[in-house]
Length: 550
Image (cartoon, rainbow, N blue to C red; front, side, top):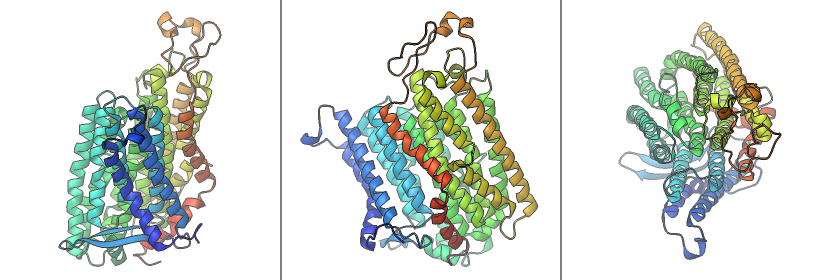
């Protein structure tokens, strides 16, 4: 069943357009604007160009989704397969199924919202032309990662995003941005070198780099020792990007230093490239090697869940001088731990939970980074003690809509039933209760118990953040020092309040509402109607785990 009937050739064009258009748009952004399109402000013209290109890509992705045959989500659709490098057997092979389509839509949506947000709130830094060009290159690489079906093309797309993200952090970031950017690029490049060796090993030993053919073969053409080595090599590269504990240490620094849209894209889509690689490459192509490492992957995952939560609790406590952006970054380590735990179960329930948690994390954490960026713009800091302390920074009273939306995103992140964050965590824990044949049930049930404990820790630190930031520390205004009574600068004129009270902050602005409302709405929709996503992923996951057989 399709929403609208679209011919295969048009579907092919749409998918190719989605991948290539941002790259062409990036080139166009760097060229001088035609006389009729320059307008009075060249900077605004290039920002408008970014909104236009990302909007066109989003529309194409939505049309592609409406033409997708929802009765056959396990079948690759909109496929293009042409020879590119015959000597190496590399082909330009594109296609989407129920696993990649949601990630494609998420990437197109988040990039468009980031471009829309930047049109009114461009981060301080060099030329807007370079900023928009880098965002578009980043979008093209991410979309290509989810669309290509050749191992070497996957690697090229996987690496394509590193340079633009490095410059977004290094040139438009905040304090310590250069050190954070170097740490990001070094970690990911070292992981990628090892991953390339594993991909080459699979291609040379099996005689093809075609991911569909390799998934259908289901590892039968590869010895167990080759599979184990391949999983170890590829898994390291994917684990760095995910990020999996203990390879996560680049993430908090990168998020803390990155501009708001950089953090949104990093958390919302770049981390998903690593977990997508586990599902698309390791599970179907080297299943025996994956089965060997699955218990270790699950163990690292649950350590990451607990470690990320404890780090957040430490940052959230009074007097810790914790950075709110850094706290949300550490929460990503925990949330992606649930994704890895679901993948490690090697069961349809667990993998579906992992894919659902991927999308939920992109929506919720993307919204959280937007909100934290807005709070930092208003106060000039993301320090929790400053936000919650004697400055009277209780958002409920000073910017009620902003405070309410932050509380909504926080409870969605902790997995409140009825919101998107709940289903992914629940399904991964169910998958761990009954893992795939050959995996230790006692071990995985222990991992399940630790993961469930992690959900309690997540609830604890998120509720602490809501209490401190949205309600403040309840310090009577009469007891404050004169310095503390002076409110921080607001993003816009404050409204007069009762004598002796700090003025209210600018609440949610129109451009902010336009960028944030879709994420909040989709969080509710996915939580109330999970079948929208699970109906796409489940048949594709069943086929993937069955060795290409429906």
